[in-house]
Every structure is written in C-alpha cells, then in structure tokens.
Image (cartoon, rainbow, N blue to C red):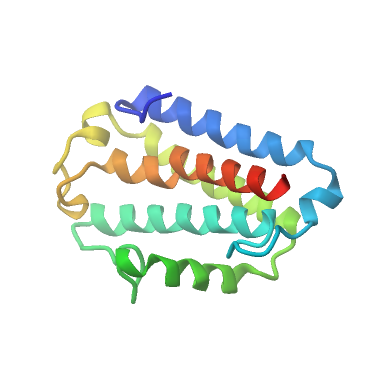
Length: 165
C-alpha cells in the first residue's frame, strides 16, 4: 500500500502493519522470540525492536502535546537532532535493554493505541495539510505519524525477518 494520504488510509495501514508485526512475532516459538539476532544490528532481539517502537510512539505523542500547546517540541528528543538519531536510538536501546519481552509487547501495544487515538480525533485536513501547525514545519502532522507508525512497523518486520533467516 502506498504511503497514507488521508485519515482512513493512515488508520488502516497503521493497524494493518501493526497487526502484521505482532502476528508475525506471535507465530514464532518462545525460543525464537527470545533469541538474539545475529551480530551487526543495534536492536539485538524482538524486545529491543518493540521497545524502540514504543519509545518512538511516546516521542510522537510528546511532540504532539507540546506542539499543540503552541510550544516547540524537542525533536526528535532533548539533546538530539535528526542527524544524531543513531545516538538517540542507542540511548533508547540502553534504557530498555532489561525489559522483559512480555512487558515490551504490552508497552508497544499500549503506546500504539495512544497514537491511534490521536489519529482518530483529527480530520483529513488536520492530519495532512502541510504547514497547518507551526510545530510540524513544512510538513504535516500525518507525515510524522506515518513515520512513527506504519513505516516504522514495516521496518520492524523487515528487520526481524532478516534476523530470523
């Protein structure tokens, strides 16, 4: 499916890709779910991937809350720039690396629902009109949400599949 351009597509694709990811994980044995990936990736296992997604959901939600108040959110996070995203992702990995897999699954599902509820309360125009909100700059709110949801879930599925080969 092409990148979402309206609310219905965003809701559908984010749900579809999230369910594909979670279903794929649940189809793996407990041993496979808990086995580390081959060396060469920062996210070393499924737990790491899920907590990465969870934290990006939370950041997206925080950007939204701060931005909608009229303030400028720290994007991607305080002390980081888009160019230093790899360092941010390493910090996220360090923060959550001891999280049990079952907690990671629940955290990711919970934060996904939080972002989904954010999508549901907006119109197509509010989501996809560029420059509508000062905090989103030249892009749209929807573009940020796509990156934090459907596109990110696609990345996660590909990473896990590659690691499981």
